[in-house]
Length: 79
Image (cartoon, rainbow, N blue to C red):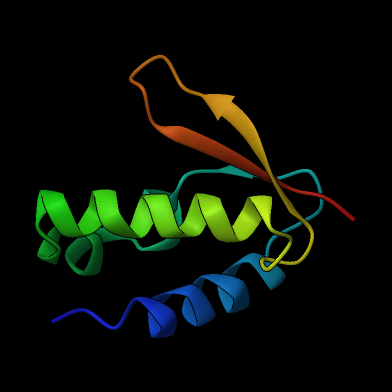
């Protein structure tokens, strides 16, 4: 079972290391084997939780910036 709260904390740390105005997807944060080890349902659930946390202001300096052409949610680190 995936610990979504731990993943959110890991995402916060990785976002903190990004340069200002960097656009990213969740797949960009969890490269390679780690992201691919999640099932499709787990990736979707984490995506929903991450977007909710961004919209509630729980992910510092991050905003939703729309969808990529492939339908992936994109985010931007600001400040």
